[in-house]
Image (cartoon, rainbow, N blue to C red; front, side, top):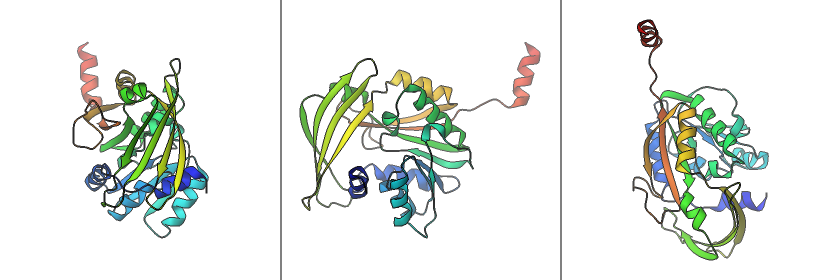
Length: 253
């Protein structure tokens, strides 16, 4: 198992997980399409909450670990690039957690991922995503520290962030994150994240045939604050006129 896979496996449930579980419970068909599932930190919580999950990731090793950990559960794993999402049944909730859009290589891939999410979402369903705050990414400098507070009240995970380069042309921030666990384990991960501005996001949402329902800060349902590291967005398929209504407008024109 790679160090990143081991890190993802060890990360605890966090406060914002409650939002994802609430959305899964509200899914009109009880199904969740989780894009960028990794080793399944969120997946297992969704399954434990009664959701039927299709987990998509491009990393075969992570999917293998995920499938082994949840053998016999109501889980389907799909190895695929989220920017080239294969066709399949529509579901009530499409989830893009773990700053998935930030990790994609460029704006075209982000538009494609959102378009795929819209295509796989039921008309009455929802698309939900987690996004690193663009202002936090741009302002990141030097060495900083923080904590991941497990939802179950166990010992926090100490996180040290060493800011790396910022490339204005590609609008990508690089950094090194060191995670220190209560049992003494220390794992390191490299961040290579795109700064996704509200303007780009609005355009991609519209192009995908989605519309914004709500925006929250790091811990939904709290609103966005100036110090939030992450944002959470809830989207729905855009209302479209029926073919009959469209035809009537055409005749009047």
